[in-house]
Length: 253
Image (cartoon, rainbow, N blue to C red; front, side, top):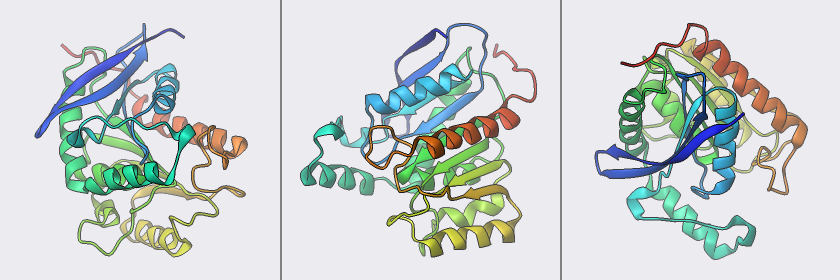
């Protein structure tokens, strides 16, 4: 399938956020997917994943969430301790409130695109962005209808802005896929999330594929697990299919 893709700038409260967008070259309009990056930041690896999403019939937007700091581009193939410190610092500079503001900007941008179908929006986030997809699903309950977190961190914390506290506000469907072994997400955290899901009654699935570690969905990582990774993609596309493609797409005027 041929794609139309490129860089755009999304207006936000604090400036213009560079973002990669991709969509099929025909057959629109398409449901929108917001692809929140992981801690190492904006890079071609993520653009390729956005292309895969677009080829499934979506208008995918991948924002450079570190834009407040300037332009950060890291080559993970040459990862060092110093590089890790760079992206940890960038990651820690973001807040749930920042991403909520940026998401409002992205939704406004998407609403202005003729190739984006009106109606529900989906999203996905890996690692650091598991907290963000959970947050925006609660902050924009009438828009975000299918949100997925892949081995997300920071979803259950003891802070007042902990994303799990918003689960009762979510009106869409959530998918949480954690690794079986993950030093960044202890098992008690997963158990606490399951407890909150049960308490709130939100429509959500929590899975921990056997034999997986944090980062298992990225082919370039040593921990890549192809079978669980592809199964996670299948579940992700099924989530979006049933929540975003049920009704005929409406064109924007």
